[in-house]
Length: 405
Length: 141
Image 1: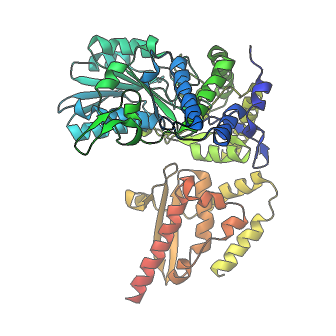
Image 2: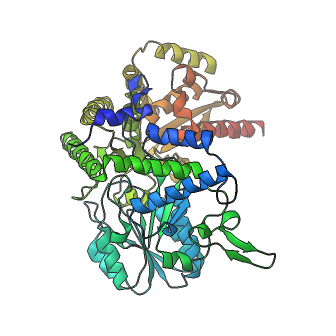
Image 3: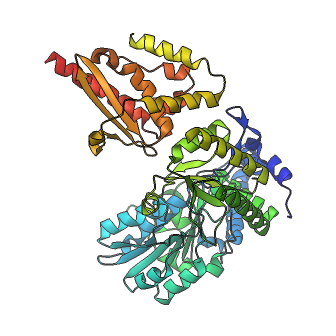
């Protein structure tokens, strides 16, 4: 192992907190992960030393802020290996990135067209398409999954057709951790000229993301799931696509010239960034990605895979254990149920022992319904988690199960 | 016993537990003793949707006093419901309408009644009061 977990943990102030009198064990990283001092300091430093509005002032502060803001964009572009920083649109997060495209696709989708998604989508990559389809008389089609939680590629092949105007799917399932074969699926869609949008929320901090290699048209993610701040995210889009799409919101920075009769829109990426942007958010997002780079995504994947295997083996030993999502290709997300015990009960008792997990449907109700279960308990790991924490969690879980039996 | 007296009795009962585990084990036990809602009433009309755990509640009036029955698919939720019902069941509508369940804070369970908890308990308290109001109006007519 090439990483020093103790040193990494010392970067995250929140990890030393006590919850209900017990040392916090934070296993809710799929919802959001914790922030290192580097990111926290970056936000404080911006407001202490640099704050001013970007792209408009001639004064020094504004120029410093603008330079730092655009350097962050460049950092993000390099991080995901985009061709140009023009392809990086700053948004509030994955959900807004997806909504932006859904909104801009209103001119592209028509009656009888189809949008293809999968059963494993988060509501954020389902509802915007569903609503777009309602509005335009188009059809939302859903690719099923296997019992293990992999996309059913036979169905996918049969559902791709000339009628499909967009294929939108998750890089990694937030419930099951399944890593979808993104590149392969994108290539299949491209054979029929279908553009591809990828929800990368769960992937950005847990897998190598290279949009040039994936060749997708759009890739969306949130900063707060990558050690960065909340309320900040990215829409990556290929330039020729972004150039042809309608703006999403109007006013402020997205304008080049305005008269009362007409408005000329600014060029990329500003065309899609109306209003004063979240400058501190952009800087801190880049800082979060830098944190990942400094450790190395390869080292992160190796460590989290170790945690996944270690926890999976320990959980499997528990009587009545059912792990939901058993793909051979998954990240460090484990959803499970034990016997007919309600996930809410397990989550409540784990919380009493300082263990933070997620329970419920994880904003993926159709997927949970697909398995005919009331929800799951989900433990999801990040770079700062350890085998010792998993041991403690397993002990706490066994205690909970004894109480609930 | 009045509602207030019943609440005080529960507070002193829970005061015996030093350990959270004993407290929660007791809550789970109480859930098992709760007067269960008739299976035929476990329908959408009696369902209180709480996102994570489901709760069913029914109320009937007998000799001017309300008898509540309920159930939940999560046992801790069920235990907490049984606490609430212990307090309000077999009371007159006008008394139930004024109950505020302040005892839950004293026994360290207030968090379970937080609107963000998504366990259906907040909606259930509302529903208990709605039943009380409805029976109150019925009595007046």
